[in-house]
Length: 148
Image (tube, rainbow, N blue to C red; front, side):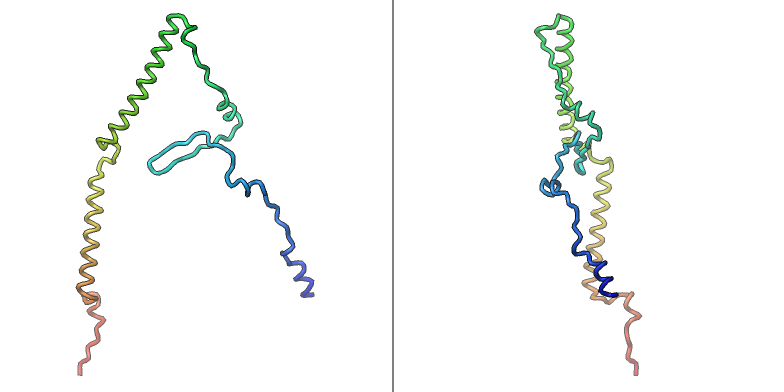
């Protein structure tokens, strides 16, 4: 009866279904919808609908300024010029904020001082432990006095 139980429990002949394509490709071909960059890392957002993929494939209609009348031409030039100026201001503003330190936390100097004092205190405790060599008030009661 033992040999029968061992035969029924033998798992060496089981064939596992493996997806060969996923192992050979390594990474999926799915491209992120957009990638958001943060100071602590990147976040990739994937689309879940096929409608998002179709919207990506659409091309942006380019306006030919030569075919426009005067008023639509002036509006087109104004908005395109405004977009360029806005992009430039965003770039310069981000650079200035980084240069002047506006993007750092408001009380970063206090946080740095706390860490500095904590490191100094740990260093002093370490030096004291080395100097005392284990002889301090905590170990005072552990001494064996041989009184005869």
